[in-house]
Length: 422
Image 1 (cartoon, rainbow, N blue to C red):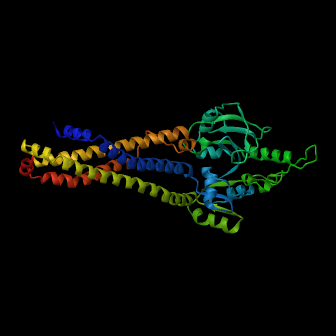
Image 2: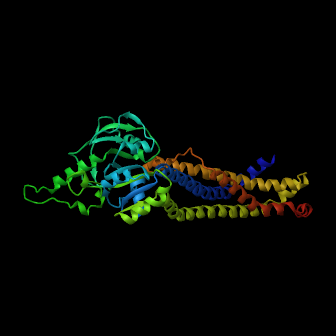
Image 3: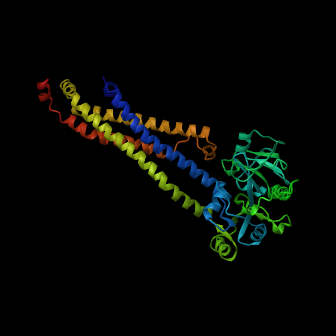
């Protein structure tokens, strides 16, 4: 029997011990591999959604919250800014492009975003069907919105008040779908896009309706000033001078703008300027603590598997000393005996590492199947990251270290003494 076959036979002879070592190593590798895949997906999404946006202008508050809400569409806005600020920025020679965004309503689990066609162009959006919006109450669906809702051209959809579930539906102000975007792998996929004027029209109508007393003379004014989900709304139904938007996405015309423009806005206006790149670094630092803790857990499991393998091999060596002595007497050299012990450990490490990687990818597939957020990250079970190769190497190294002492003991076995003992 060759070395590989003999090692497999010894492993099959101890199924419980072998299985436990495989499982322990697989769990450690799976935890680390899953985190690597999740981190890569998150990193890809952040890069896709933030690239090309040099500055976000919004209401005073947390700059990270401003970027998360206005760019990544995952938080509530910090407030609203005057529509006039858009024109001011566009007149500034330091600004190449200024795109307004207005939010406050949702369709199912997706946000309705008031903006301009330039927003779609920025993310490389292209139409899969229909056309772009041209007037109020026309909507263009992102690919994920269309796939999830099943809506197509000329369908109507009704937005719900607020950015969280349970808001009142604006049933008397439906949107008409005029276009569907192809999948881009960016934030576009998860949005219902419409002109900013649509957002104003819906909420002007909403507040006009609720400010009217009913037949019993009761006043239904909900006090939109106290509603944090609708900071984009105009405080009056007057001219554009009174209108507001949630935020403004800015691209610089010159590198000099990065040094001057944010400081001017923060110090000379009632607005704040936030750098998406800087805030993403903060976000990664905040998330890194949790990810590092999980990676440490995975590493502990891998090392525990190595220790378990060492104990198993040491015990097995004590049980098989006579067998090894017979093999030596039949002509097997010390190198072959040592190689057989190392092969056993490497087989366990290889099997456990591969099983762990399979479990990690299966976990990603399950997460993508049941979670819209996971699909938003672009996670794919077929995606491999370079760190997985390093995980495989780590598992093999741990196995070699675990087998080092037992293999040295086998190498130094006194054949005559063992055979004499029988």
